Image (cartoon, rainbow, N blue to C red; front, side, top):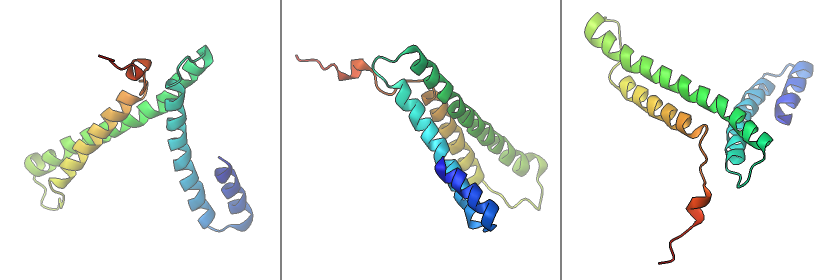
Length: 131
């Protein structure tokens, strides 16, 4: 977060574009930190009520990113066969490679949605069968 604030201040006073790039990189890392912090809150052994609520709230953007990824992948999976078989545009240079990218985006989005509100570590995982 401090990198975002410093880069905006430096961009304001110096007008160097490299500080805008620094802002973008810091913003992307802050999203990853947000997701990781929400996962850590959901993995607590005995969370308090506010920690449970905060873990849920931090899972919402992760679920939205996953749903966005599913929607973009689905659009690609539908668009590629439509452009090739139905419309048959001669100027369309795309191929079936975009179809695989769409399937990958859909599976990545489903993975993120599934992990958005689930605990990745449960106390039952620690218990081993002594026999």
